[in-house]
Image (tube, rainbow, N blue to C red; front, side, top):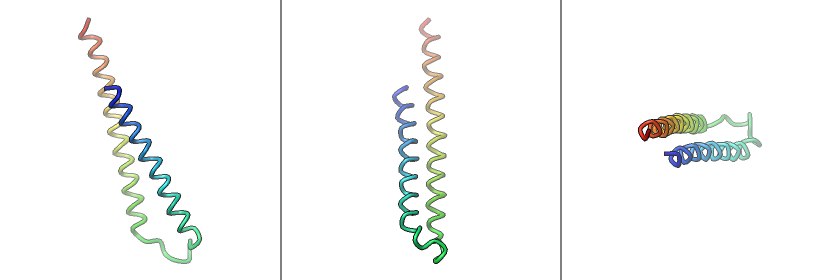
Length: 80
């Protein structure tokens, strides 16, 4: 269970890093034309979807960690 919790938090970290990288890439290409053209609505949709994916990943990671902690604590009491 500990390995699963570590994998869940690693995936959450990876989603955060890739989201920051995608945001930096979009900013790099959009920065020269800021305020000269309107931002496409798809950028806001993509940003909202990215934040939602990160939020869901954090919720799942917390759930897996709590479950792993309960399982490891329960196994100590059951073996005694």
